[in-house]
Image 1 (tube, one colour):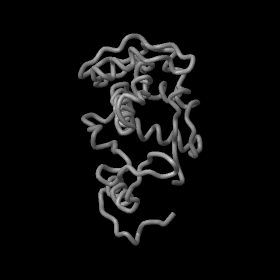
Image 2 (cartoon, rainbow, N blue to C red; image 1 turned 180 degrees about the vertical axis):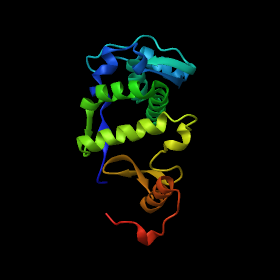
Image 3 (tube, rainbow, N blue to C red; image 1 turned 90 degrees about the vertical axis):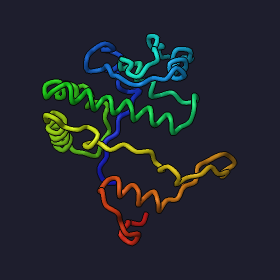
Length: 196
């Protein structure tokens, strides 16, 4: 992968500084078990616990509550945890669509210092303006513009015991092909895949 963009949730201090700001509130489905886990969880390091989180189909979370929601680790499985993280990202993308161009530029400026990327500054801002163009189009379908998936893909992995502990083994070739199909909406012949 030649170009990437990564953010570290724990470094997104603006989420904590502006907990009720419209830019940092999200609507996410929260189960009773997830709400109980957040509300009864010990602190993460020296961080303050968020306000009480209710359960429901569309719970209005502050950015700080959403961060705790995305961090839930030991309630169920790592696959469920990454699904919660994808839900928060989907809520962020929906929020971006609702903000309009001015709100998007303001938020991009707030978030930019917390992003690690191989993109140049001009490429980053070009990407932000392309994103803004996509998400602010009237009638834009967010589900078609952004793809979310679990890796390894379902039914392509199994639990195994390696390195003196429990681990996950996977069918690498099948995952490569499924990822290629997901990203490019076409199948790929095995011989066209780049070997590592």
